[in-house]
Length: 156
Image (cartoon, rainbow, N blue to C red; front, side, top):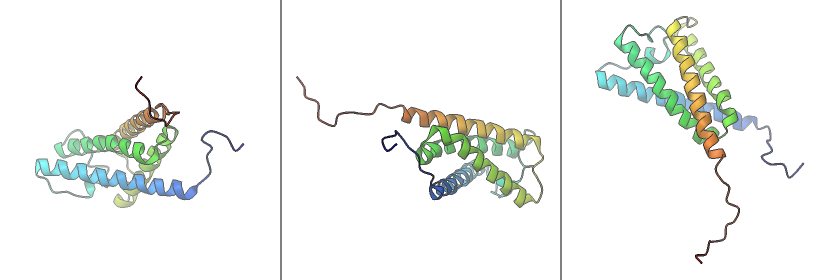
């Protein structure tokens, strides 16, 4: 079936490079959001803000600001899905993969499995936002009209 529309070829190198790219986008943009928030409140940046599950919480201002950074990061990563993944069907896959590796990173960094309920809630909200917005943006570009004629239009 040589004439099949959008036939896919299994390309593990492409998938692996997209995973690495999305992890880079995730941590790069999260670092920028946390640095911006820390600069606004004159706080010192720390890797604990990114990887310690106990930091996120509703009770302290740093916890609320870190949660805000994670939410803003989900929106930024949705743009990463649009520019680097470009397939609406793959947005959820890459979103869950990014957050799974973040779970492993948090586990390794703090030497304990994240047990804070607020951490799990923030991650669930971020997964939902990143996947839904990324899929919406990708579907918008996939559904654009395809021009069938490349000839210039004449004004008659």
